[in-house]
Image (cartoon, rainbow, N blue to C red):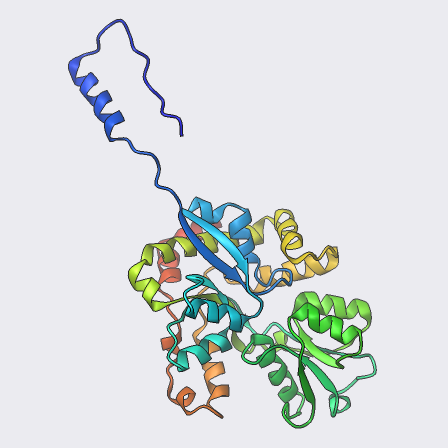
Length: 339
């Protein structure tokens, strides 16, 4: 940065002013360089990980002193594993992965949640019209412990089916991979988020369960870090969360700019799919993204069937809401919306 120097004048200024001017330029120092940090997102589906994309591309990480490198890590389980390994200080993940990791003694905790209900739809081949038609069929699944895997099991149970006996579940991968497998006939049904639902409708695949309307408390997607980072570098976490809540505001209030970012990262160009995905997340993402206590209770209750540790666990131990609380109670979040 260029240093601006005062012009030398023929007339000599008063001694006090000279001292002040000299002291100013001796003491002035360049702005502190932004802190380099790696952060991750876990989905390329439009809008699912969009708040991190917006924080990066809208310059909000930079604004709050973070030189963030944004890295794609496929799936919430791998996202959590990267945090546990110390490769990603702060990043995205899903509630089931965090819960399992913490029950096993892993140092990871939720500091934010952006979609706090299960936002999935169970879609199927056109030949499948009712729950009974699913018996013996093959379902496209994500890896164990992901939110999609959890959602598929919940959806099947809602239809009165036993996921382990009445159907065959095959691990395929992310939502777009599962839709391709459905289209090719490799699987007969799967669960998708809003973008996948729009694709399914376009291809003629009927929806059997709309899980979003059930409003099941659930930490679908959130921001995670370690208690060690919180203890040793709380200001890093604080600045990250400032950028994140500003990204939520920018996402909701600057639609056209946001749609361009969604298209860039997801590589989906279908305007209807982008619009529907943007609308869903604008509607369901809270302005103050507290990590959802009841969502972790939902997961622990499900895990308690097979894991005794889950039955004894307190969901409060899985969240650290203080950074969102600071921004909420200080008026920072309200100031973004002019209220």
